[in-house]
Length: 139
Image 1 (cartoon, rainbow, N blue to C red):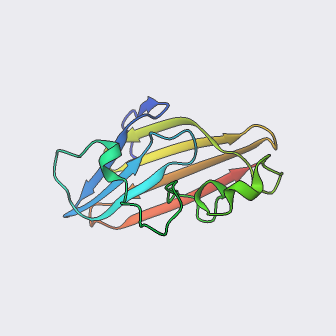
Image 2: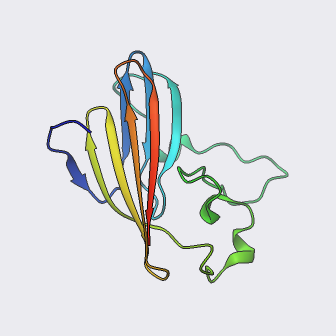
Image 3: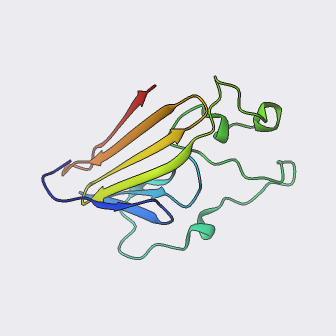
């Protein structure tokens, strides 16, 4: 992240990263690991409200939309969530703790208090429109 002072928050919004005609939209409205809503052509200055990004439900799909989170394979983003109620140690319940955002990058920190885990995710969209995603897990 650059030398600028990042904006700190605990989420509750959409963040858009933009560079070289590429746009990345990150959803920070949920209580857990943020979701990636868009990665493609720059969408411009105005974004739709978070609820407008929800995909339509198919007639044969579950009644609950499963989010695509930044942590691939996380229990919160998989269809077997009901079987894992109680969150065993190998399936932590992540809660968004903080967000640091500056032009071209966003860093989120999620915590799983039970097992004592901290997940820091950094997304950086460079000047050429290349997205770099890095996770750091600390126990």
